[in-house]
Image 1 (cartoon, rainbow, N blue to C red):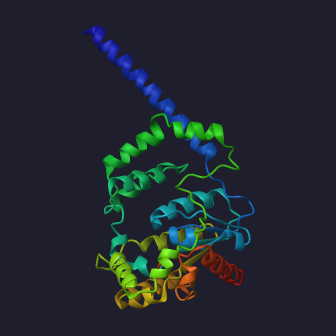
Image 2 (cartoon, helix red, strand yellow; image 1 turned 90 degrees about the horizontal axis):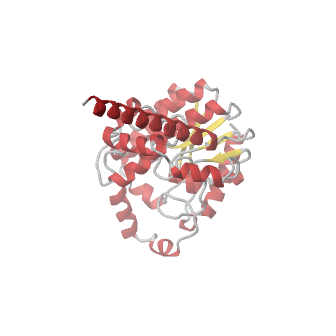
Length: 313
């Protein structure tokens, strides 16, 4: 019995040592391959796919676009927090908050995704150099079991993805991980373009986007958090209402529009924030990928306008 206890304790000691070692290794690899904002970047652009496809940093001097598909505002907050701490030369932070973001579905975004998408989003959290504490996430419906699984896989157990990435890439020219993101030019989709003039397409898009009735209450609170963060670092926060099909915008219920502009008014009244309303800037469908995403031609048009507007702030 004594020998069994000794062997069990020895096994636990070795296992603990391995876990500590691999956790340290993962943390080291994440830290040394983490995205770093270049010293000349003045305007940081981050958010969801509307900015990822819609704002080309090529046309905005000293800017970088690190938006990524399906990024909720609370993830943007922690990403901005980490990057502002690294680089004090950033003077502008551009984030999206559009009329369709006023939907209640955004409050429970993580809860309504399937496990595959949840794992993808939770992995983005764990891939940050300083992972977000679970206590900050539980208010957003983050499942503790699933979060623990992702944390163990990405931060504790051997992560061969990071090991191979460290070997293959230098820090300055690697393709960044999905949690950081980068501008993605989208070509004109002929099939969508041809059909997007129809009333049936617009009605279907409205039904899909506004399937769940109700107004968000929690999602926009992270606008306040980001505004406070920018104030702390002396950075200007710029909220953008992104372009959308004019027919799509027209058919959005006024309930959402009233709530949206009320939220924006409250934000502007409380903080030193700039608001750029581009929702009606582009009318021609040829500049869109779909009802809320621009293609590369639309991104060029919007980006040049945004560069001018930011330069005038």
